[in-house]
Structures are given as structure tokens and as C-alpha cells.
Length: 229
Image (tube, rainbow, N blue to C red; front, side, top):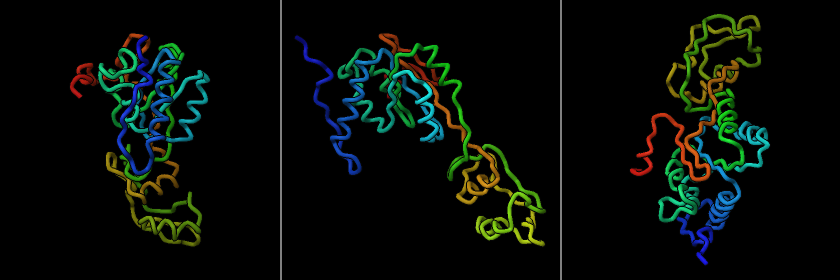
């Protein structure tokens, strides 16, 4: 009787933060999902928000399974080449686990999966280091959206402000951020105070393996990439 590939010994690199047992548990969970679910998708994410992602998972009600974390560990679980993959074709999607990516195992149809991923997007406040999506400039004059108690805090963020008869006043025009430039900690705080949301949390499908059928969704990527990476 042929030996199960799932029970094959796995060599994992050492890590200071998480031990071998943790990695092996992830590998085993992924391999169990390979056997349990008929389809697996690789997706990329932008501006991850844990609470929003949790809400997205709960909204599916599909009995599916998500995996995020070390791409290398997920690749080991699936197989990084045709010789060590645990199911035919898995090494193809394994090659696309690069950058901010994850796995989604499901019983949903491809049409259903595409629909929920395409429709889901949430805007949130951008964090330090994110690139500004637009120029935000405050004009000289009263800042009526802020109470007088906010004046010391605003000055600490670099805003040229003063109190004028109990009203926070900007004494000169001030550029909070320029489009395309990374946000400083101060700029990110000011945008939050202004209620300006620039970060789009979005999940983008990259590829899938449904049964024996591999499909690539992401424009700009070629199947040849998986052979050369």
C-alpha cells in the first residue's frame, strides 16, 4: 500500500519567536484542509485589518478555512515542487505564496468565491508609512471641528495653531500630506482627527486549484513565473 504523502516528515527552519511544534501544527492543519476541501485559493491582501478580516470570514458561513502567516511554512505544507507536493498541482499555487498572501480552502463554487472577494472592501484610517492617496491641505483660519482643549495636542503634531477667543485657529496654510508620499506619525494622527480614511482593506484572488484545475486570476502574473521562481 503506498505511503501517505501527508505523513511525510517535514524539515522546518528554526525560529526564535515560534517553535517547531507551532510550525508543525500549521503544516498539519493545512494538509488536513487539503484532504477536506475540494478547492484552495491563494489571495493577496492590502492594509490588513484584523477585526474586518474576522468579520469577512464570519460572513462567508461556508465552513471554509483561512491560513495566514509564514509563506515558507505554507509552501512546505503544500509542497514547493512537483516532487514533494502532497496533491497533484499544489506546488503551482505554492509558488504564488509571496509577500502578503494567504490560503483559503472552501467548498464554495468559484463563482461564489469570486463574488464575495470582489465585493469586499473596507476603507479605514491609514497608518504611519502608508502612501497618501491624495493631497490634504488645511487653509488658514478657524478649525471649528476641534475644541479648544485640542490646541496643545495639535501643536505637537506640527500644526501652526493658536487659540483666538477660545477657538482653535490655523495661522497659516498647512499641508498634512502629499499624494504618493509616506505618512508620518503626525500626518496619520491628523488625518484620523479629520476623519479622512485613505487605507483600503482589500482581498485579491491570485490563483486557485479546484480539483485538478489550476487557474491564475491576477493580471501581470504568468504561469511561467512559477517555474522560474
